[in-house]
Amino acid sequence: MSENRQPGPSGRAPTVADVLALPVVAGGDPRVVAGEEHVDRPVRWVHVTELTDPASFLKGGELVLTTGMPLPDDPAGVRRYIDELAGVGAAALVIELVRRYHRPPDALVQACRARGLPLVTLASDVNFLEVTQVVHTLILGHQAEAMRRTQRVHEAFTALTLRGAGPEEVLRAAAEMSARTVVLENLVHRALVCEPSGSVERAALTDWERRSRTTPATDRAGVSGPEGWLAAPVEYQGERWGRVVMLPAAHPGRAFGPEDVTVLERTAMALTIARLTHPTPWERTAHRNALRELVEQRHRSPADARARLTALGVPADDTLFVAVLADLPSAEDAAAAEVRLCEESAPQGPRVLAGLLSPTRLGVLLALRPTRPWREAVQRVSRTALDAAPGATVSAGAPAGDLADVARSFREAARVAEAADPGLPLPSGRSFHERSDIGLRRLLFALRDDTRLQDFAERQLGPLLDHDARHGTDLVTTLRGYLDAAGNKTVAARSSGLSRETVYQRLRTIERLLGRDLESGEQRTELHVALHAVDALRALPPAGRRPGRDR
Image: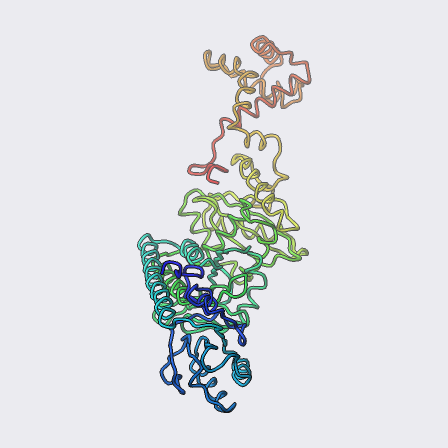
């Protein structure tokens, strides 16, 4: 009987079409003469009958086999016979054209077509007992395999729960098990987590809120809405937090089955436990993940990024984007600033996306109307961060007119943060740093860890610094005053409180130690840059913060 093993794809019950492909049935030359569009119906059992009222013995899903002997002679009786089979949900009717009929009666064909019941004729004898044995073996094998798969689903979700998995990991597992796209949304129809399977985020999330609102909520896992979503509520003791949705397969003909329902129910349960055990709200985690994807450009395409952001409720069209980074003294300060910023931005609607990018770095994406002054919005963010932690350093990138340029704006904000020398004051009325603040001193401060800058400063000023260290002199200060005076020795002497002769003597000593000509404008410039480099190398950011190191 090995040639009659499972004919269809593993993982699903055999269908009418699968049964007809079995050698034990194919030998009878089966022909589908009505209801061809429904041969994908699953076969739950096989029932051999010669009764005039077989429907009373059926429960639905049976493949009914008959020689045709009990069929009524009159068309009305035939219609009643088929109506009863269709009413109880029989999978198909198979009639053998050997004993009573050599072609199917027209009334039988018409009745089956009217009720959408597949009618299959067999041109030669088929051993009905053997068909029953083979198909039942397949069905029982499928049921056993389905039980094993269900057990694996339960074990997988139990392991996720015990491991303390968050919503992203839970949905990723659900998408892998079901080979379908799975989405978690909150009560206001914001798509917080999307795990696509076989499709891109753009296809799954485009126009999400409208599509979601046309899909009615259900009290338990079930299919609803115009697109046929399989959805289940995520709730605990009557308090509902959102729902998890499994989208239909991209290709038609693959309906949701019991295993999909099991996966979704276990997903909802795991999400409930994750919500109870994880203190961070889903929305905040979703914002963090969305920001990191934008900063690191982990989207497959700009269209995917746009769909992801829009599904979170952040406008992506006709919008000016500004990237802001707040570096905080400690992880506790960063977490407090994140909470405070999220609370204060809530009344403005979904035009602020905020989240931790690292333990001490808070990222903020402002989605502003093009006519709105962006510096005022950044200033408000900066004041909020400074109120939460006075030691914060806030930096902004240049505005981006398109979502594709947001990563560039964040990179620029990071460069500004690296150049934010704490020793230099900000312009009056502004509490954040921006690109225009980066002059020579800030640029050198940003490059302070570069060994090439360190080597340059040492080659230019090393002998002079060594001399001051050995002899307790302060020739570096004299050199600084001279260079700040643009090479004017009289101004340098006056500003230092020294006589001109003393300054002249010290400058000659400096020239000798460095082997430089202080009358050369180019060499004075090199020495002046080296002095600023030494200042940058000696400067340290505030305790606990190293701009750019936590990214």
